[in-house]
Amino acid sequence: SNKKTGLLAITLKEDDELLYAGFCDDNDNLILFDGSNKLLKLAIKELPVASKLTVGVKSGFAPCSAAMIVAESDLLLLVTKDLKGKYTPVKDFSIDSRGNKGQSIGDDTICVRRIESARENIYLIPKQGKPFTLARSKLSIKSRTATGAALSTRNIVRII
Image (cartoon, rainbow, N blue to C red; front, side, top):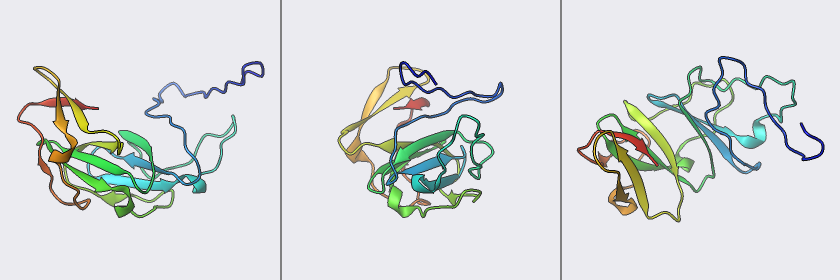
């Protein structure tokens, strides 16, 4: 902590990697994705505020591949290995307690992203070829375990 600038810093252990940092308030939720087929939804108001000596709290996932701050009204984009995508409302997931194992989503899910309501397109970056956009309206809202629609025949490496 620097008293002159008011900046705060965190210290990571040598083997730690920071996946995500975001602003939130007590009405928000934290979504954690295990990289395969589980999502964990934690209420921000139930997480303790850490001091500089606090090591954090157990979430329920040992490996975590994505994290995001979401509101109940947000949509999540879920994409599987075979490039099928769908939107699932955040409100479809119940709030878990710390240490829970999460809720099932479609098998072989490789990507979970929060979709902002003001955005019209999804930007996709293929492994080979040119980046392209996909109209947001091409995908439908489905339950957390339903199969989505094909996004592309290309091998995509990033979805923004």
